[in-house]
Length: 126
Image (cartoon, rainbow, N blue to C red):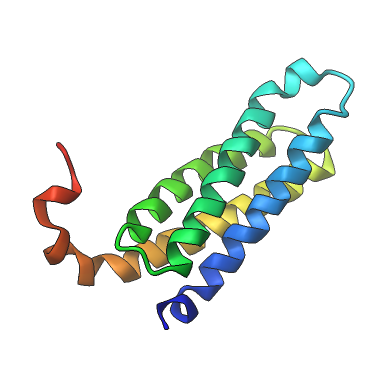
């Protein structure tokens, strides 16, 4: 039931993870791989957290909103890095990351109001 509510975000996360995997693999084929090191590292981080976020949403985890907020932050960083490179795979990855960040923020905003009272102070260790 909740999975259907989050399906657009799950789909965006899965598409972003796939775009990041393709980007990382393509970056490894570039002439100057060292120049692409940060892009590759962020692609791997982003793909991992996108799959984690999709998994948390699919099982309606109480921590899905928090994971999605972190996913949006990682997607933003990955998009910013990929956007610096002119290769089509980097530009396509940047677009997928931005779509995913938008969906994750929307989802986190939807989920948090109902969660805030139940998680209380235990949700943050500030």
